[in-house]
Image (tube, rainbow, N blue to C red; front, top):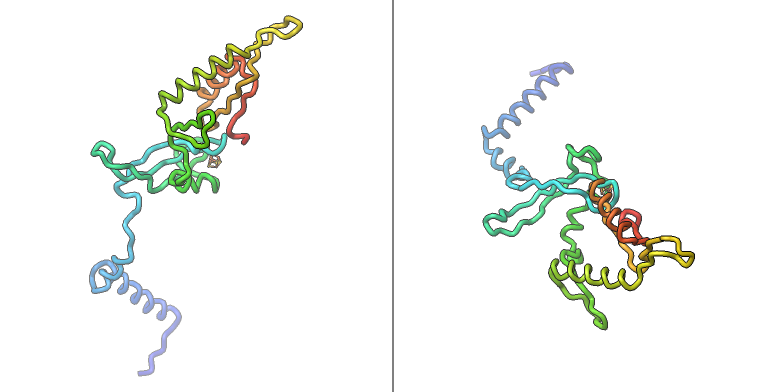
Length: 199
Ligand code: SF4
């Protein structure tokens, strides 16, 4: 049979073919199993969302951490995905390349996760508790300030300087936390004060 097919007719035939394929793919034929086998389950299903702040720089973008594992059942939580927080006013869901690679940072085997100290004369760091770390920092700060605080200069002018201890603060904080940190440092007389965002 000599069948002439116009352009419009060809499109109709093609459309019927696509529709038939789609119907098959929806489970009306043997192809459904093959199609289903290639559809990956949504990777964030059954995860817990936790809001946080990117630790890298002073932009302090909001992030959402997705984790598996229920801590209440004694399971180990594992972060499986991190993305920008669309509700955060700073970044509106966007992240720069450093922030977008945060998951690797979290899982890096070299990441510092607890306080460590290298004692005088030792060639290695050892793990200590947070209480031990805070007590040690407070003790060393007090001793050094008592020994080196300068209330007045040689001309007798009040200067209130403590120049032998410095402080490096974090940038991933709120304005209020940063304000308190600065007040503590300056209230103690610390001169050498800087921020991780500039490192
Ligand atoms: S995502 Fe990038 S810009 Fe935002 S805080 Fe992290 S490092 Fe800074």
